[in-house]
Image 1 (cartoon, rainbow, N blue to C red):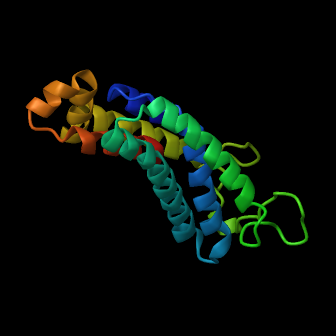
Image 2 (cartoon, one colour; image 1 turned 135 degrees about the vertical axis):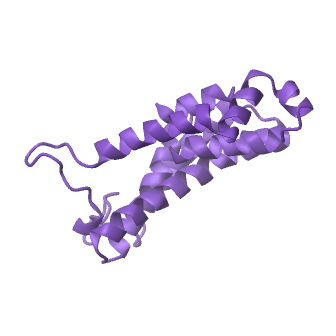
Image 3 (cartoon, rainbow, N blue to C red; image 1 turned 120 degrees about the horizontal axis):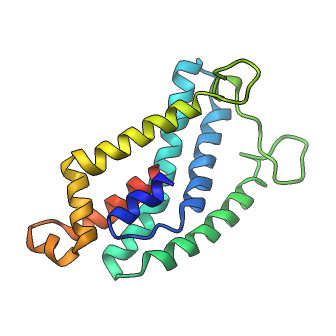
Length: 182
């Protein structure tokens, strides 16, 4: 929801959040099973990998809009399908596929890369706190930072933003990358 909201505030319709989530999830999964390190390092490292994966995937659509004028709805929908099939393929490779399996099932992430639970037997984990932090960050970014002002200004009127000296093409790429990161 935050990813769509940030894009929408900047006048972009990020319909590709599902694909960005898939790519970010695969990046986090790779970090999750590739390293045997303490949880205090492993969890943030996996989160950073997910953020970077989603940002790069969304940045593709932003770059296409900035360079060619391609509509972000079309490109993000197409990138959703590409991400789905790419993830499906990656889950059948020896890098990701669980040993002894022929179906697209991944290796399990190390226990040190999994979120600890907050309230014992309940399924609530620290992901809830991370989501709340993402809400606070998104609010600060959009309404208290210069970058957020530029995002909203270009979303309201790209020609006005260009006239005011804003690099509209770069803002499109940045908005989509931030949206994908979320």
